[in-house]
Each structure stands twice: as C-alpha cells, then as structure tokens.
Length: 258
Image 1: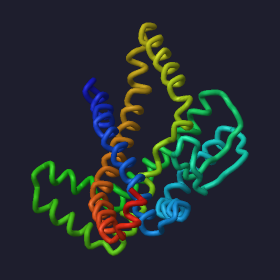
Image 2 (image 1 turned 180 degrees about the vertical axis):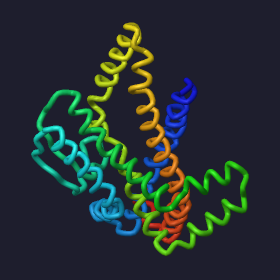
Image 3 (image 1 turned 120 degrees about the vertical axis):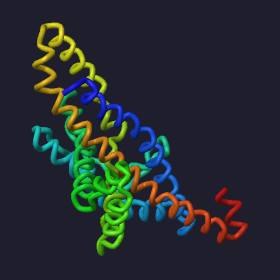
C-alpha cells in the first residue's frame, strides 16, 4: 500500500468530522425547540426529545456497558433517562463505572463510536446500499444511479431504516467525559510508533498496524458520510416544522419564548 492509501481515510475523516459535528449540534438544538414549541413545557420537551433518539441512546449506553464488562471494568449504574447538567447541556444517559487505568477508560469511552459506526455502515451500506448509489453517481452512470435510488426509495421499510439511522448516528459521538483519556492514549501510541520507527521497525509497523488502522478509519469515515447524508435529508423537515410552529404561536407566547 502506498502512503496516499494510508492517508486517504484520514483526510476523508477529517473532512467530514466538522460538518458532522455542526449538523448534530444543530439537530439536537432544533428538535428540542420543536418539542418545546409543541408542549410549552421544558421537561416534557426533554422527554419527547429523548424518545426520538431512544434507539441511539440505548446503543450508546449499552456499548459502554458491554465494553466495560469485556475488559473487566465494574459497572455501578446505568440509565437512559435525560437530565440537565450544571452547564445547561442535556445528558441523555449514563453508565457509571469504577475508576480504572487510562487505557481501559479510553476503550469504554470509544465504545459508542465503534458500535454506532458499525451499525450505520451495516444499515446504510448493507441494507440500503447507499454506497453503490453514490459510486454510480461519482462514475457518471446516471441511469444506474437513478435506478438504484428509485429502488431504495420504493423500499417498504425505508422510513423505518432512515429513522433508525438518524437516531443511531446522532447519538454515537462520545461525550467530553468519554473522551477524557483519549489524549493520553494518543500520545502513548504516538510515542510508541516513533520509537519503533527509529528502532528500524517501520516496515513491520506499517504492515502490522497501518493497514488495519487505515481500514478502521475508512469505516468510520464512511459512517460519518452516511450520517451527513441522512442529516441533510432530515434538516429541511426540521427547519420547516420549526418555522411553521413559530408562525402558529400566539403573539403573547411568542414574546415569552423569545
């Protein structure tokens, strides 16, 4: 494999990540606003928002729990009930674990991203075959791409899988506490890689780790791309619903909410 083959997944990942984070924050904020406009009750809005993303929240917290059990970390609490944090952010769920070394903490923290990406790729590529549609468009085979897209749109369970993708992909990103041990682990692996390289084991390191890491990063980048596609398809519906609710709101209540 050439150097560009190793770099391409990382460039792809870094190119999609900022847009993905922006879309996820925008969607989280505006779905909450929609439910607040509908219910006029903050706690009820939080509960309804939780129900929308419940499949993703369940996968997120279960992946923490499963990873913790696999690597021998004791769990002491599990919840998917939403609650507000001191900084005003909304915490959709949690798994409490015992304090462990930074390596195992990093693995438990990364579990939702790994599980979420696997699920998104399995649904988006395995069930809906969105990669084949995109490839046909890129290759300029419009007839084949249109035929495949029509087949996808005519699928009886399309809306179900789009919803599942939406819920899973918008809750798979690790929280700040999940990422707490990542910088230290990253520095450790970087130092180890540099040490092995200067010890004359660069070729061994590349063949043993480089290819597998590039393949893993490519899967995550594909999952991010599928998520962006789904989010962009859903954003107009969210924007339109929120705009309509603002128009229907009485002036007195409009002034209070603003």
